[in-house]
Length: 517
Ligand code: XMP
Picture 1: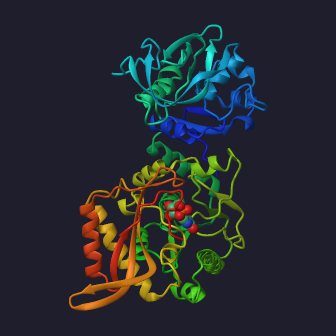
Picture 2 (picture 1 turned 180 degrees about the vertical axis):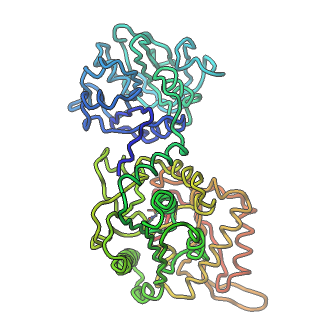
Picture 3 (picture 1 turned 90 degrees about the vertical axis):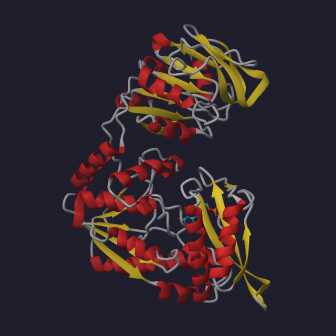
């Protein structure tokens, strides 16, 4: 479902740079709605029809003189729409409008001292000084300005770190304002979208909730909607939104495979008790355990759980009979990553292994597909979801099954649930639960000798893992204070039977992954 927004919007033309999602997030942080479109999937005529308040050209890995270098039609500059070019986007603007781009004699990477001309609207706001740090990453630079432009920032090695043609509302920066290391970068983007493009900052989750609810109502009519609820942030927020929009026309199926964290299955059920929906919880632990008996290979575990999940879901869905819509919790990063722009992408259920394609439904609705994760969380708060659900850390679909190395047994599951519970409790007590992106315990299959009182023990080693990451593609291990780790270790070996050793995983991703299996 493309939740059409009547808000003012900024178009981000994607030339393949690594920070492109970040640009969109920053613009949204300014309360301005924006959409990312691959540069070659939208024509000038379509852009003219879309009527964006402004356009941002992103960075990209190529050189404007390269073979098949991404480009845009010069007519785009004739539409009178303000444009901001970033890095490759700035080269492209200069190149198309008659300037010159050359290879740097000295390339600039990383934090770079930059001199700004405060008379430029991008740099004139607030308390921004004339000299500040910007984040550079380039091997080309604008060596000759196009006609009508002037340079408004420079560094020791880059004479045009920014240029402007205010009459035509065209601006370009060599550095990356979207990256945190660029001081005042967000203020620059804010100034572009508000002072140049004239956006008023009308994108709020309160507005969005109202619009989305009305649109769901008109699309669904009196139809029936089915949702696989995992208890994760996205499906929970979607459940709340659909509940407000269509109430009992919605049926949520929550398949509890038994590998949730301690008390979590009950917490999910509790969270939605009293909501105006049909809520079905399927306690299927025995079925999953049965299928996993003797399985210790990680991929086989994942596949077995994914397949069984679909089977259980389908069985339950059949009891409901024909539904009109299947709701999916797809969010914007998935849409951007798929490169699909606005083509409907059927994402495999993000918390399990695939889509229940035997369920009889007519259409898919994806009301969150234009939201980033932080916006999804804000929407959840707006809709009255509990903090526990809104701030839930990511949790893999196969759950604790892939955090128990080797074969899964009831005993191991219980040990892990108890240890993980203590770790989470201590992280929250230390106030680290909102800053650590993911943290959990892993029950290794390793046993070692220990001593407890006068007795020798031969018990399991538990590993603790905590990471800092923005995209989960790369991660740093969290620098949790030793005191906190010491408390966790001491509590776990004392309170959880059969663990006599606790280790902390200090590997980054790559080369390790976040999960152990
Ligand atoms: P890895 O271990 O690949 O994990 O570094 C990256 C992120 O993905 C989560 N993850 C999953 N999420 N279903 C999911 O919904 C899965 O099967 C799955 N496996 C890993 C992992 O928890 C981390 O956040």
